[in-house]
Length: 207
Image (cartoon, rainbow, N blue to C red):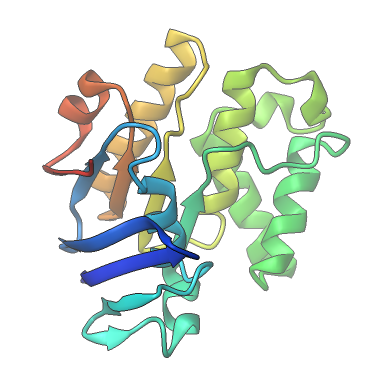
């Protein structure tokens, strides 16, 4: 479904990622492992068309996403390593704002907000401001934003960093359920070996 061919990104004289080759089959959960500074986040930025590579290609169903980025943007959800939410808005307001960016509106947007709040377990906190949330709840809402437009592929960049074991387990079970029930293809980066062992069909290691 998604193929990465000799992908590299160079800033001045330094490579942030070099010679990356990998693929994702439809419906797989694939782990991406590596120490800090290995280039995982740079690779994710190139896969999601946020950063243009210095060389190489990313192909979605054999069509270059570098030449045609809109095709992957429509079917891709990204959960960034850093929390990307508006803390002075409620959970529901955040979902509505990002849903409109995805060009959802009216009854469809309302339905997707309801479904996502249920999926991430925040229905009862929908009206609360995000700044009152725990770290784990913010992480769950961050995932919810990436799920709004029903993506076929989701990239999760260390989504359980710095949260309590209960929230971490909830997130892992959510990922597993989305993959099983919806056939969602997942690229999952983590430092936690037990997470990768629990979730992933295959792994790639960057060093």
